[in-house]
Image 1 (cartoon, rainbow, N blue to C red):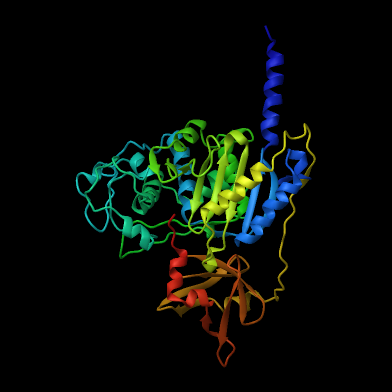
Image 2: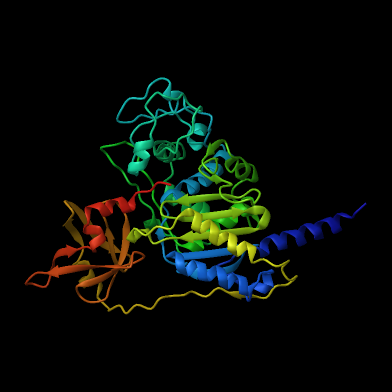
Length: 447
């Protein structure tokens, strides 16, 4: 028989291997692709493809280490529908801890909306909502015109009998989460996921509740996030919910939430995750957001990729193009990684921008409500600077490049203040994409 000491030593050895696969405060990157068993020449071809797509960023991770990064992986773009996969992970944590029972019905949980629910609709369970099979077809916040067009007639399907990509289900899941746990969704994401995964860019101001009172009582919950933080989320799932010595999301929930329950076009749909899709990789699943945003997870390949698009400017890259890019990267693999691959710290790209110094007093003079697009935007102090909150609830930090002109962080647009005769801000001019009424669709989602 093997000694107890031998077993403990092996458990320690195995655990250190697991520990070695997670990024710490900084990502580690293979010094060359060959260290990981990839061809630099073939990856250059993939990079050339990336350059033609108009994508904002692409990041590929193999075995917890960065293989390639292209574009701006630090800039926080809108996540759109990827928000739903984040919520799925939070549900898993609270289901495992016994706070949420996904077999409860929305009737038992007291869910209501602008239009009263029927007795049949009230029988939909939380599990049905996670699978987008509630059978409740009511107006919802953050819907696109296409989603409204495809919405089935009310009462046409009983709960758990029909799949429809339903923002009502997704938004009500947010309401149920806050109601049952007593937690703010964005704060809980920070504490339960962002902090243990050592996300480098996520802040509480990067999430907000988008309420459309004319449509529903249940708000959407959009996120902004960087590609390098999204990759950490993908690696967590690729590692079956384990991060260093902690099981953050149970492997049981990972399996259950990424199992297909419905046919959904080219693949299947699980608990707010898309399954398989246009790839032959076994066990492959994705989180997707409007415009071409993707987190792809291939656990058996130890491979995670993130694809981003600048949807602030209404750019769009088809999902098929993002998948093609990931496929090119995978096909550039030539063999096994070296036993002890040489790694380097992935350095911050850090775009230098010339800001001017302004006193806190001068900055505070810009705070206030400003009319915009038949609505108002709010400028307020945040930490040692300014923050602008658009009418939708979306927030951006402001950095002065002159006494009148400020850069909107992440969006990389400028706002301009018009001063009165006393030198005080009297008017705010937003970027053209904000002034265009049609641009409000830019904050919508869809798939």
